[in-house]
Amino acid sequence: MTSKQYRLGVLHGDGIGPEIVPSSVDVLDAAMAAAGAPAIEWEVLPLGRSAIDSHGIAVPESTLEALEHVDGWLLGPHDSASYPEPHKSMLNPSGTIRKHFGLFANIRPAKSYEGGNAIVADTDLVIVRENTEGFYADRNTYAGTGEFMPTPDVAIMHGIITRQATERIAHEAFKLARVRDKRLTIVHKANVLKMTTGLFRDVTREVAKQYPDVTVNDFHIDAATVHLVRRADKFDVIVTENMFGDILSDLAGEVAGSLGIAPSLNSSDTKAMAQASHGSAPDIAGKNIANPVAMILSSAMLLRWLGAKFDDAAVLDAADRVEAAVTRTIESGVKTRDMAGSADTTDFTAAVVAALAAK
Image (cartoon, rainbow, N blue to C red; front, top):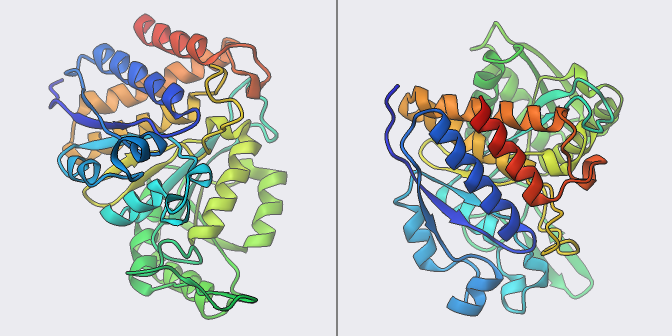
């Protein structure tokens, strides 16, 4: 197999980011070598609190410019709640990057592992989250945000649902369902939010007519949470708006075993960003006990996206190898504390790298 050489950005972020992002770099390097693909060229870029200290802003313009010229990037978690003002009140780093590059699709798998502390065994689903509008005020307007306060005692927010964005994310979800189990669930709240999430539901059902081989059903968001806790193993692909997708994917990650194993990919038609679903966990930062699985698997999702974009069999093979090595490592009993194990970040990473070399 032949493969192009990829140039990927590395943004360590805050909290546990400087621990789990380098783990992902080590794993991807080992996977590309095992697949016989050219070594990745990495470009480390400033972001987060360290960038505030060095550049005066959490997402420097030089970082955004550099990301224009790489094939994709790994984004560590950020701890924007702890930033000093005015940075704390600004759009957070991941939101800034998602908005700048129009990363409209947020793909969030939840998969359980044997011996992995899952609440629902055999969970294997993907939540496809619309990433640019909905009820998240930090990204649903061209300028400013969707929140305002006409008086000190009144706060107002608005949610945006458009046909164009719904059709776009629906096609992503149906294409994914086609290569999985051909089942798709629409999550909405059309019994109350009749015009907004009702539009999301109805437009998605219109798109469904183009995918007659995919079975479609739908749930209200409150019912969906109950069903996920009880029978997450019965779901395949779930498509929903921004805020519902964020909440459901965190729940699904815990149901599958831990939010520490919940990966995520943010993408457009031309750009993709690997970003774990969890936060920066400042309470355990620097202790070398963070679970790197979510970031590692997010990085594998980026490889898979690149492989599909460039029709690159070697990089697709590398992605398969990462996922298989993580599975073998967990099933062998090497697990971090959040999964009822005793391995630290370094130990777990080394075990995955060893599994890649052994294949």
